[in-house]
Image (tube, rainbow, N blue to C red; front, top):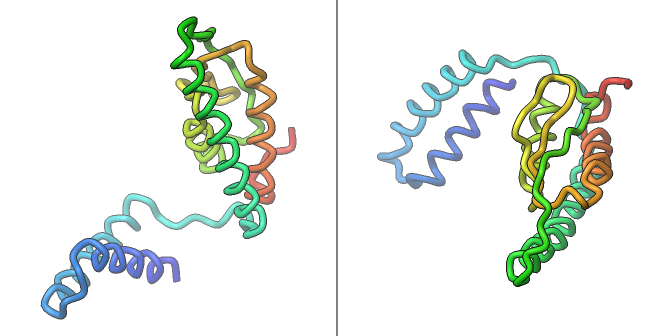
Length: 159
C-alpha cells in the first residue's frame, strides 16, 4: 500500500511540474515508477511509531503561525533598533525524543522559529545557536517538544 501511495505522490508531482497532456503522462508514469523503486530502495517502509492526530496537527499549525509572527516581529525589532539588543550564544536543550524521525522533525521544526537554529546533536541534547540567550529559550523549546509529542502520540520516550 505504501508503494502505491509513493508512486501516486510521485505521479502527482510529475503532473504538477510537467502537466497532464497524454503525451507526457507515459513518461510521467515511467518516472514515477523509477522514483518509487529508488525511494523504496533508499528509504524502505518501516512500522509506524504511532498514529498522528489530525487535531494535534491543526493545533500545531495554529501555534506555529502565531509563534512565527511574534518571533518574526521580535527579530525585526531587534534588527532595526540602533542599539541592536542581541545577546547571541548557545543553549543546550535535552530532548526526550530518541534519535530518529521524531527527533529530526523536532530539530527541523525548531529551526523554522526565528532567532534559534539547531547546530549539533550529541544524542542526548540539541545545541542551539540563539540571537538572544537572555530569552526563555529552553522553556519555549519545552513547549514545542510537548506539542510535537502530542502529535506523534507515543513516539516520545518516557523520560
